[in-house]
Image (tube, rainbow, N blue to C red):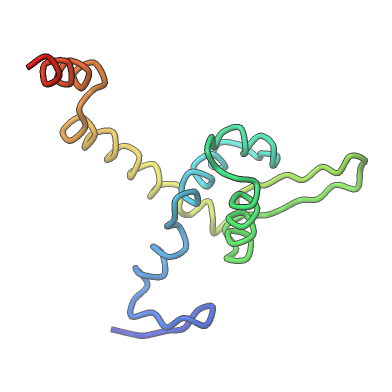
Length: 127
């Protein structure tokens, strides 16, 4: 296996690099949303409930640094910034779509629906 270095980190294979580039709590979701459209910061924030402003900024900067997204700043008042996928970022699109489909399939097998969960909790609490 060929080893290589990216961003001061030594990788044993390209798979681990790919996983590093898209892994994390928010990166995959941000990339998924940008597959469909160019979005402004505030639009991304609304699509990601629970993300802090600091985390969104850090994640966007990391994705930009890695060449997956493009940040376009417009010289207007108030400032307007838009995020879109680069060619490299668009390349991960089919993988994310397949992962989404797989997630839906596996959720049917592994995840208990909310009504079923409530019913099982009611049975457990009544006994």
